[in-house]
Length: 150
Image (tube, rainbow, N blue to C red; front, side, top):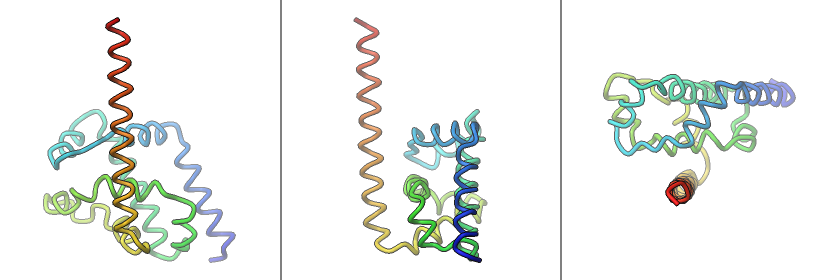
């Protein structure tokens, strides 16, 4: 496949990310902070199940395109970072989810991410950044609640 065709495919993937429901799903996922496999099981039985499944299946599908040669991995990784965020958030639970019967859960995304250079360092950085964002959101929520009480 030509570089132009690969670039066009990346742009098509970007357009899919801009679809309104997908935006809502991605926005929700940014606030999803599972601490256990129970949190994931709980979300799968909630009204947010569709969001969770939409985001995880989207990134696994995009990774499959890369892993099967439709898009160059370097080009894909240079153009995207959200997939690393998604994997960083869910990696602690992947083995448990697979053990519960979803054997193909994020197989493609894991393969793509694990082949990135210096991935352990990058995952550590992403997790630290996630934690800082969570703390900032909690501070904003606390300030908003305090302002409402005043």
